[in-house]
Image (cartoon, rainbow, N blue to C red):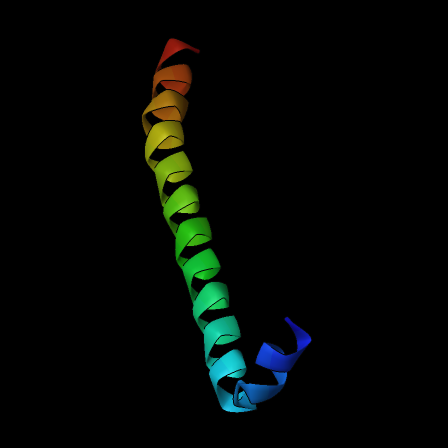
Length: 50
C-alpha cells in the first residue's frame, strides 16, 4: 500500500482534495438553499397570523 502511494503524483492528490472540497461546498450551498426555500413560506405564514 505504501509503495503505491509513493508512485502517485502529488498534483493528482491535490486535485482530488480540491474536488472533494468543491463537492462539499456544493452540498452545503444546496442545503442552505433548501433551508431558505422552506423557511421563507413559513416565516410569511407566521407573520400573517400575528
